[in-house]
Length: 369
Ligand SMILES: Cc1ncc(COP(=O)(O)O)c(C=O)c1O
Image (cartoon, rainbow, N blue to C red; front, side, top):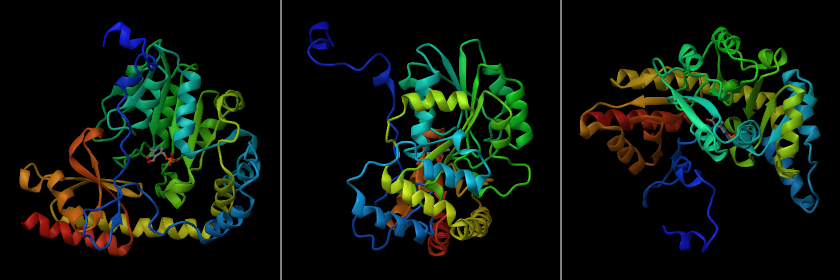
């Protein structure tokens, strides 16, 4: 484009147009499919807590009133359930927002932020939005590699983004490894522990990050309500040292969490029975789906989240793309993950019993075809 046309309209600053926009999971099936099972966004197959639905309805009559800009009651409910100080929590419009605010606040043009080879994609987008440089490091066996991350740290590094467990692999780093990572970082490098799937992890050696945050000045933990039934409400939160809370509160939107989200969130987090049901359902069906797909001869990355990464054979007829078409035509919407470095895999969220059994049965037929 020549200079004259550059001046003829506003142009984004350097680097913005290099960003590859995030592509969310599909939610529709081809025309004519009677029933759609959306297994592409790691939502809760049990739906929202009935108490959250009721709370959201109650807000409807008061939608003229601005929400509390500090989401105090939501922070207090989170703090009560997790045994934290509400002053060390900031809520956000999904945890995506808080990840973006961290990048915007702690990265300057030319700075570096470390991400992992198959790490959650939004980190890269936010790093680039801040004009900084994403430095992607190799994983080992589809799991973050602490030594590789530490080796990538340079004097320009400002943030390490670690999804634990990671999406789309479902693998996790035991707490000892996270500690070792933190111990190897310079104190001015911020370690972001993205624990979006923490509720689903049932492993004795896993810790979402509370302990590390409490004892350090350079660690934050981000969490979400999206995976337990409130993806549409957009509620995320961060537990962080006071100096980081102070900085984020200066840059976030003054009413970044809306009134419906606040009330639905309070009701949802207090509904421990719904959380327990959701986690128990996942536990049963994560195991079943992983075993059944393995029996079909497919490789499944061992997952501790509410989804599995399924690897397909190399022959074109049975590739991930062919499987995706086959499943979509039958109403099962999975997630393609080429953008995550897995051109021949699909990510499947654990669904209802009907959906899980349906996918396994459909894939059994597909693989014989
Ligand atoms: C690892 C990870 N972090 C963060 C998020 C963002 O979740 P939300 O913005 O819905 O809170 C997701 C959602 O897919 C995720 O997989």
